[in-house]
Structures are given as structure tokens and as C-alpha cells.
Length: 470
Image (cartoon, rainbow, N blue to C red; front, side, top):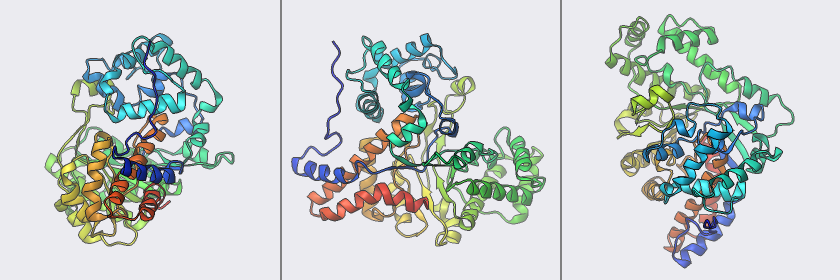
């Protein structure tokens, strides 16, 4: 007989009774507030066409590299989990789900366990802890839920009370799914595109010339020159903004923003187009282009988010077989202060600039990010994401950043997911940890409880709206 699966109402709250009671009261202020999700990877087609989910595996396992990477570490083939195989037939989907249940123990103590348990209990009505013995029964319970009309993406936006959700989109995308949603009078939620130009700013990367050619086609600009290339980027930013975008998103190896002289930028661009620019010159041009992105943000008002220092596709064989975003990206160390100085010296006090810096390198929280955000009105610290959107890491972040920069310099929670049904669980984790941290300050008599409640509400409702100009 499998063990029951339940959710404790005090999960993530402090064990001390006095502090826990404060956390409970603070949580009651924010538990039911709408979800604002300004950065994520849910495909817009799912919502525009109200695409029904197929099966438990394609809903919960295959699209979530947080889940698949730990199974891969346990010796499971990504192929057996459905990665790179779309769609799976019933037999293979069940087999992949059995693998998850058989390896339930590998998620003990992880945020993935918190998210999955929240989904299983609160959304699907699963009542037993997943195991090898009950894998098919759990699968059937979730499959029955999927079959309901109320389990389609649009209905779930309402059920989860997702007020705003942003997707992540290529600069050459025509955004027709977003236009479809904007023109649908029956659709009352807000779905916005996000301008993600990374591969267009990396001249040394494979396929760059072809991407630039395509950028010229869709923008109507002549990208034969550097000036035309800049106009093409500005054109597409304007197109995205006209289609509801509120931000641009960038992830490179570092945070460099060193500008080049116009003639030097033009020279490197021309050589890159001819395929003869050096890697060092291409890196210099990319850093210059990030300076230009920040300059453009001061003009068009799109919030600019940075999440650098990730070694992409660390396992070459997995990348070659399955492509990107399958869990093979690994964090690297980061330098912030010198890297951002050129851009902040020029634009750091610009009234129209909101610059949000995320990192997976915890060592820079108190040393660099918090002091920068505590001085520059344009700089906000992005909350923990990816490997560090876990309870202990989030609490370390809060204590490292807020004592220097305060609570008003935070981005608000970012769920950064393509696993649609995990969105409410991820936001609930963040809200509980906000309240746990604030409860400690109240219990230590460092903060009045009424002010802590206002801060908790602000972190959920006000911060993301302010930072992303909603």
C-alpha cells in the first residue's frame, strides 16, 4: 500500500512557533493574489489555440528540464523520457511516467519535489505518493484530469488566476499567436511576447549570418552595413512593443557592456559578415551590442533583463542528439561591477531604464548586485531562478540582498518555466518564503508586522508591475 500524499499547510514556514504564526498571518495576505509572470517559456500557441494537453508525460516530464536532468543523472536516457520524441504513443508515455515514479526518491528535498507534490495534490487530486507500484494509477488520475474541458490552457489561466504571462520569442517571429489573442474579444488575460535576441548578438556563433539576413528581410532594413543592422534591431524591438512586449531578455557568457568606436564596430561587423572576424573581435562586438541594447531600452522603455554566465549545452553529445534546453546548461562564475560600469556610467540614471540582473552565482549577491541596485535607480536584482530557485538558496538570497538594497529593489518572482501546471506551485513557494523571511524580521523586532504585510503584498503584486511597467 502506497503512502498517502498530502501537503502540510505550514510547509516552508519557520519551525519556531512564534515566527511560524507570524508567517501564517503574512501568507494569508498574499496566498490568493493573482499571478504575474513576466518571464517564462510557455509556447504562445498553447494559449492562442487552446491546445489540449496530450498525456501526463508531455505535460509534466518532457518539457521540464528541471525534472529530466535529475533522472538523467540517475542513469535514465533522455530519449526514454520522451525528449526529442514528439508525440509519444500511449505505451511510451506510460513507460516514461513509470520512470519518474520509480525514481521519486531522487527529488527528496528539492524544489522539484515541492512543485510536483503541489501539482499532484492541488491540481490533479493524486492522493498517494508516487512509486513503482502505483505509477499507472497515478498516470490514470492525471490523464482523467487532462481530459476535462476545464484543463485546457485558457481555462487554467483563469483557474490559476494568471493575470499576466510573458513568452520568450525570436526577434524574427511574426507574433501571430499574440496578435490572435489580442484580437480575441473572449480572451481577458494578458499574454505578452519577449524580445530575445541572443543569437543575433553573437557573431562567432554558427548560423549568425543567416539569422542576420532573415532579420533584414523581416525588418525591411539593409543589413549589409552595421548601421542597417542596428536599425533592423530597433525596428524589431518596436514591432514587439507594438504587439504588447514589455521586456527584452539576454543571456551571454558575461555581462560585458564595453562600447566600441563607431568605425571599429562597423569594421568588426563587416568582417563577421564575411566570416573572417576573430573570436576576440566577435566578443568585443557582442559586448558593444549589449551596450546598444541598453541604449535602446532607454529610448523605447522596454525593461531589459540579463541572466548571464551559463555554460550552454555542457554535454555535447546530448546537445547534438536532443538540442538545447534539456538540462545540460551549467552555471559559471560572474563579474558584475566592472562589466556593467560602462553602460551604467552612461545610462544608469536614465529615467526610462529598468535593468534587471539575474545570476546563478550566489557569491555576487551582497558584494556586487545589492550595492549596485542600492545606488542606481535603474538597477533591480532579479530573484533566484533555475538552479537556485530552491528554498534554502532563496532565503540566502533574501538575506544577502535586502539588508543592503532593501525590498524595493527586487524584481518580483520569475517562474522561468515551460511546465505550465507548475506555475502556481512555483509562485506559492516564493510567497511562502517571502513570508518566512519577513516573519523572522518581525520576530526579531526589526520590522512591524503591518509593514511586513505590506512588503509581502508588494513583492507579489507591486514589484513585478513596477519593474516590468505593467
